[in-house]
Amino acid sequence: MTSLGAPDPSTSAAPPGLLDALSYPFFQCVVDRKSRRVGLGMTVESEILDYASPYEPVPLGELEEALLCTAGTGLTGLNLGDLDPARGMSTLVQWTTRTWPSSCSNHGTELFFTNDDGLYMLDMHRLVPEPGEVSTLSGRSHDEQVERMLALYRSARVTLSEGRAPLPRTLPGLFDFNQWNANQPGTTLFIPVTNTTLEYINLLFIYLARSYRFTLVDEQHGGRPAGLQAAVDSGRLDPARRMGIVELEQRVLSMLVVEQAFICQNINLALQALGLGGWTFTGYLARFVMGGGDVPGLGFRFATAADGSTFPVGRDGHFEAFTPPYHADMRAAVDAFMEVKWAAFEEDVPKPYLEPDKVVSAVPRPHPDTVELVKDYCQYCWDTYGRFPVYADPMYQRLTVQAQHADPDFYERYYPPGALTGQHLAHFERWHPETGGEPPRRGTGGDGPGER
Image 1: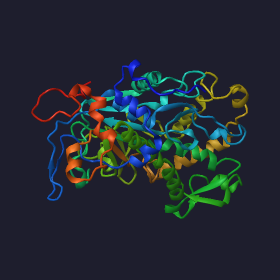
Image 2 (image 1 turned 90 degrees about the horizontal axis):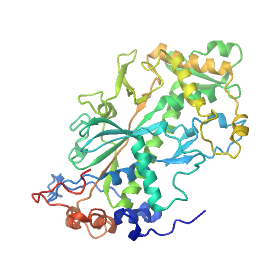
Image 3 (image 1 turned 60 degrees about the vertical axis):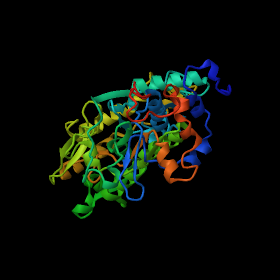
Image 4 (image 1 turned 180 degrees about the vertical axis):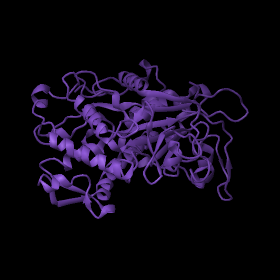
């Protein structure tokens, strides 16, 4: 592999800060990571840490946001699929990889974000690498890497609405200790949301396969098989291998919520390399963030379960769960899942192997009776409870991470040297030299470096 070498500032039109970031040591990012919650333009109303920023809020520029999005959930190429094709490879949902690991390569978590200009979603699931492109960045020069990252970012970014997203600002939607700085002017708020139905249905094909034969039971109804009694009676499923819906969905959710954590941690590490402030937090209540409370939030559709409760099912036309109302019933939803999953194995979809046809032809499709059992189980959940999943939400949101330009005066006043790194202190000089190397102060006029 050709070494990229050190970037040459004299041949690059990029700001010097970009070159700093691309060459910043990984382990330095790890040890530099801290929550830095006070950004330009913010006020800390505290008797102990009383502070009002003398600076204007400065939004992140497109390149800064693109790098954070790339770190958070960028397309990195093709997974290697280094499994026995006859045993294990049928669990894969797609061949593309991102900057974070995902069970069965399902990558069912997408990144929403909002800034002063609008609300956006990165529709990464539809992107695929170019044919023969195992990695989207390796082997490219720094300028080529940046061009590729920007191109992928722009092709994935979907504008959902103009202006900053109307997210909660008060209780109950947002805890009081986050109200002073969350989603404030100049910040970019990143909100990963997970489609739990994608990997849930995929896992059912494992648990209900002829080689596993789990009997899935409903704890709320005396432990009866969840739509699977006939298969138990016939011996197709093993009554000794019991798993309740609660345990199964706990497994699903614990597998999937880490995807949001991976994304947020990647963005946190990128904040250090870029010299930006920010932090990850859980102060928002998902219902209100997604639009099921007193504010529009991310604009998700909510459905009503049999017990009268409501739950988020998707953002219409952009990010939809495999569940009604997007499908006639759960049997149709399973069919739709199958179509999406197995389309990835078609001949025209890029794959990582030297002989892809030889590998893919050895991958077994699920037995027809397994397909029917998956449909029976999913339809039972819907018919009994009016929702799928039964306990977790089809669209799940837990973590958020915010990026902002850190206020140097606050950290100088209240902390010893080191609270901000050299990357933070030199950020405006290296990223926004047009400001004279300092953030703009209130009352000085001008649009600031963040204009797009």
